[in-house]
Image (cartoon, rainbow, N blue to C red):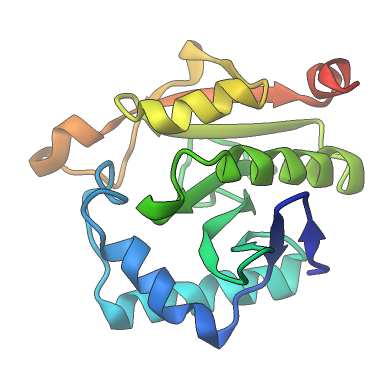
Length: 187
């Protein structure tokens, strides 16, 4: 992918120097509060390799989010195909993010998401972008609302990969943004 620059961020493909941070955010109890698993180092490395390969093949994906001023990787944000969720058509593109706690509350996820919306609607010509999260994950749904997405309760779902032992994490809310609504928000 061609890196995307925002006023404070560089959104780019994963590099070897990002492995420690990627493992940390995928094993941190606060970051992973709404996920039924934590990844050990080998699992995190495998997932990062998967994300890196997806970006190489598609030109987009869940990409590293680097703070331009410091060069530190803060986490990731991007567009992806939710292929493991049968309730979404194969053409669906989702937007998502995950940051290390020390980068929370600084507006980085919102800034990165806005850049990815511009890429999705402007460059890829998408008609719609969706996002979803555990219903109780107010931090993520607040970002969805800040970037102009609207709740679509008719599309809320229970995640098929989450078992009864984590039933409190099963119910997911869905948000959507159309290209027309995105364009109407732009100055």
